[in-house]
View 1 (cartoon, rainbow, N blue to C red):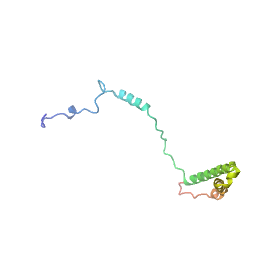
View 2: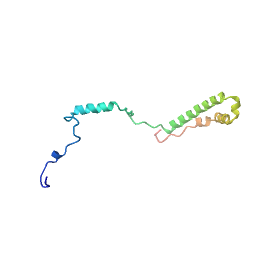
View 3: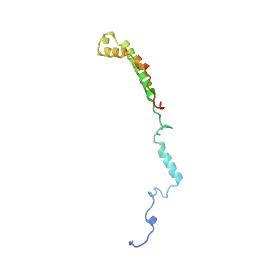
View 4: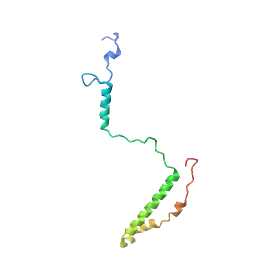
Length: 117
């Protein structure tokens, strides 16, 4: 073909991949293939709305509650510890945790933000 010869662009180049079979798939056939491929994949769960972060006072109260729960668990561990082991490093550490006075932390009420809390 000479450079001056005029040709239509779409006659030389096909759009997309050539058909795998004898003819191109219809839209419904392509959709059916797509759905068949998607059934094997795990669905990604996304929340309907973005997760809202907890406020600082909420986080403070949750942290205090977690500390109290841990202190109770360590107290139970100390009670279950055999008597000879209570004088060792483990017993001393557990006793130090149990002896902590968390009442001052419980009494603190964190300040509220500028209308955000």
